Image (cartoon, rainbow, N blue to C red; front, top):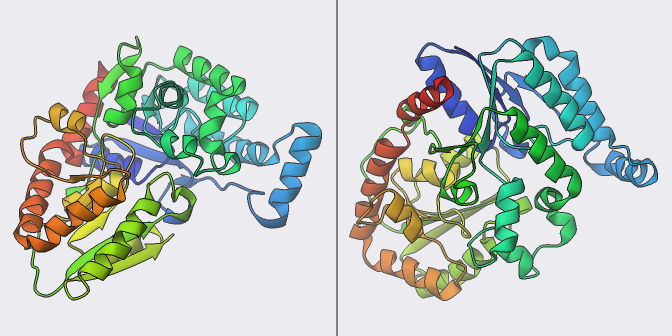
Length: 377
């Protein structure tokens, strides 16, 4: 099959591409490189006028005229290479706003995609209309909406979420769902709002290329190493404020037993190498299921503090922990970390189970076959 993957979040489409190529398919990846993470893309898009003085000019122009020059320039980049993006058997959009454009320019790009390709599918793998709408209507559900409603995130820093509550993005949502063959959720958090939707095709877990994460013996020779990687743009969304407060207490309580490493905004390749020696990885709070960073940590046999709720355990029929369910509660995090520090054999046991879980449920070759089956049906 000839397949076009559009957009990249946390290496999801790169891993899927590798699996698809392994099974003999021709795959092209178009999109942005996911910010500072710099994932490889066959046709990279660059968001222009998006920082410094030019961003101020863009915002001024937007206020005065309603014209978004960044969206226009993204559309121009797409249009220049448009002949590379047609005649595919399958196109998959990573999001309802894969090109990060305003309504009019996003629709122009999608018009071309829908018109010149056979089948188009959509992933629910991040913020989108259904996910955002559901979580504002159900604030008790653990999601990134909770720290916003708690007043921790200003509107200007939450625009990538709040835009899906506007009329134009509601309109874009309905336009996309009218034209796609179906929508696939990548984890439980995105499945919840889509259940019973007529175009919902089911949950296919994120693929992990296990060849990039060979197994190793877990050893705790001296101190237990705790790794905390911070993306400053999503600081409160991930619950980093709770993690940081918990680490202060842990450092005071166990000065001779732990070594804590904290890094900020590093490219993907550097990020995954920095936590190679860690035993415990602090990933994220506010959810039911893991994202790609958490899954890769589990593949590396780390004990990952991430989303691993009772819904997650029930979905996968788990009877033992494969990760620590992160909650926005400092005392709880300290309690869970303390237990691991005082019982290092549990670190080895959970890390081993985490790897087994990834091999069973997230292996990129198994996931590839599931995508191919859905696309062909």
